[in-house]
Image (cartoon, rainbow, N blue to C red; front, side):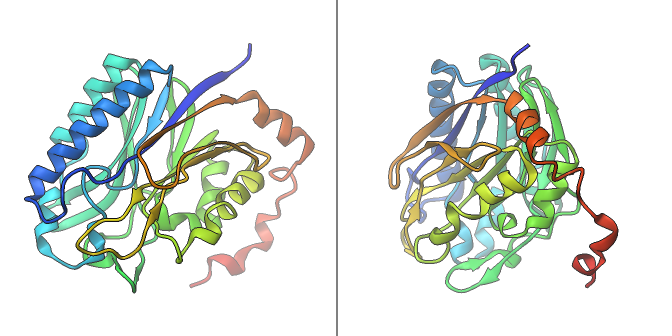
Length: 289
């Protein structure tokens, strides 16, 4: 029996000035995404992934404790609860990247995974945390992830998550493959002039090396008052051969849709036996401090 699923990636510009009260920004972005999720559902999407820190700006462009107000518990916070309702309403798997509070003062860049019946399956916490100019002061806000590289058995298939800067590290991408991922989703916030030349190199390479589908999401537009650069959108899906099968716009809101044939994974792996031919006993050097 063929295993075909329809996926969606949502990229969205900031709809409330970053100088507005934090909770006002969050509500505006959540309302906007609820509408976009509904549009994706109307187009037949069976799963959807939102962009990194979807319900706010990319606030790591500055170091200001006011952004701690965006933190929520996972899964008990209001945003994940709302998205559970949306998942059940639309019978859609939803990946929800938000700013997570674990304990008071202990925060993670995380993503909740919700199945199509509204059940919470678990979360991924961003593993690799950048802290560099210009405007990526993430270690001020986030503790490095401590949950490893989980893969979630959803109604549409086995889904893994990798967040933004994680994509520069092939080791975790391989772990997701070894853990059974069929689709890996990478919600991001990255700007032109810094990483754009890598955008369509690294993730198709992960798809080829690990023979799974990848959905790469990047927010579009610029965000005042920081203006650290243009978030260049161009969210896309690529297949296990590394071929881009759907791509979004550069600077506007977009819902990127793709038909995904999960049977292609077996076909590609039967041709290129990378998992069979691995030599893990020879890789000790890559895990040395």
